[in-house]
Image (cartoon, rainbow, N blue to C red; front, side, top):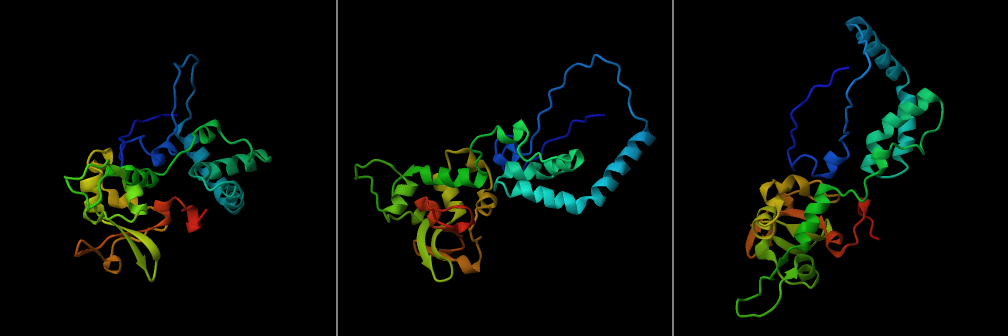
Length: 239
């Protein structure tokens, strides 16, 4: 076997700083080789490759069914990522290995999706409402607290709306949010629109999502209000 280094490209966040990288990374720690290694010939390697492919193709339906069993055990990216590998192991050994998940697959605790981390960063930002004046002596408050208390944040790109088609939503202008609420976070250096678009239930900006912000109409994300109130779960069902 030969291991070649590759360049690491990531379009959103730095490598190994997000959930997507965490759950797709396997770390190999190599010890110094002490024994003599006999490598396959090119023909032996090609023959083995063909045998592997043929075996997988012939058993593909069985592999799919077995993999789905593991995916159904939890709606978790870690389980989804190893479902097919575990299915192959089960079929090859002829035994149920569903309770033998690899350590690396279950060793992470509370892995959160990057879009969830971004949204919470927005909600936790300390700021003032639009009605605040320099003469007022009041403490900074979180965005979530201001929104839940129906205080205006339109100048910062956030607004509660109630639409006929989508119901209660948080209208969010990513350009304004990034400029006024994320300027002191590492999200400021990235295109947050791609992450926001991954949020479950979010409607991406279009002519249909246009809302007024301080009199100016702009396209925006329409995010389920339950994200703000803390009642949103996967699939859109409230707690």
